Length: 60
Image 1 (cartoon, helix red, strand yellow):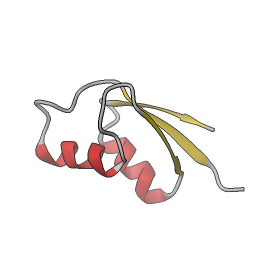
Image 2 (cartoon, helix red, strand yellow; image 1 turned 180 degrees about the horizontal axis):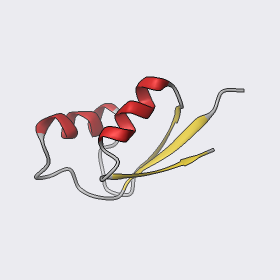
Image 3 (cartoon, rainbow, N blue to C red; image 1 turned 90 degrees about the vertical axis):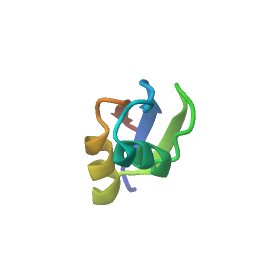
């Protein structure tokens, strides 16, 4: 079974770099406190690492 990550947007991307805003959007996050579950591949982990100051993650 593949590992999954639960990602929650805890800080607004307003005022962040446009690249960080696009990364948050690409993760499927639109609103504050919204949570998504994604497969924990290398690309997703890299995206989460880039915006780690905006999101909270946990392994499911």
